[in-house]
Amino acid sequence: MRRSLKVAAWAAAFLAAAGIGAVIAAHSNPFPPGVEDPGVRSSASTPTATSTESPSQSWVLGFRSETSHELFVGGRCTTRWRGRVVLTVDPLDHLQGSGQARLVGSLACDFPNAQLQVRTIHLDLQGQRYGARFVFRLAERGRVPARARDYGGFTNTLLQRPLSVSVQEATTRTLSRTDDTGRGRFVSSTRFSLRCSAVCV
Image (cartoon, rainbow, N blue to C red; front, side, top):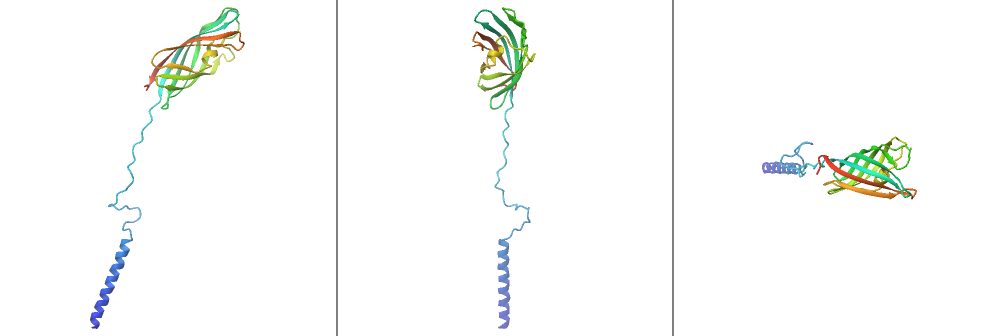
């Protein structure tokens, strides 16, 4: 009888130890820290390649301009200009560029004029592209000679308002405005052309 009690006690002890081991195994991680279970797949998505922005386009804006300051009392001063602006079009179709306009020949007036005429005008360009049309403003960045004036109509018309030029063909713009004294007007006729120089669409 005592022997059977001992056997039963040992059996109960083994069963209890097995149960405790099962509970511990169920709540423990057999892999050390930093080691991933090979049977578990990560739910993280595979990174996808990011799309790259299209490169900026490069264009050249060329122009030839005939301008004048016409006086209502009679007589006028005329100038002729040739210019070139290199500009870029970014992925948002913003325009930005710089260049210059140069006087062709010299100032010609119907009356004596000994004033110093500007010969070179450094230009900045800012604007926006709308499909086949570039809309922009030209602004003066500097001039040579520095203290000279424009006695024709270039700075007094082309640098005063937005300009619109077609990508597909040459565009002529005729502009005019009354001078500051009210005794004459500035007039300009300018032929613009756009040429793609790199990565243009």
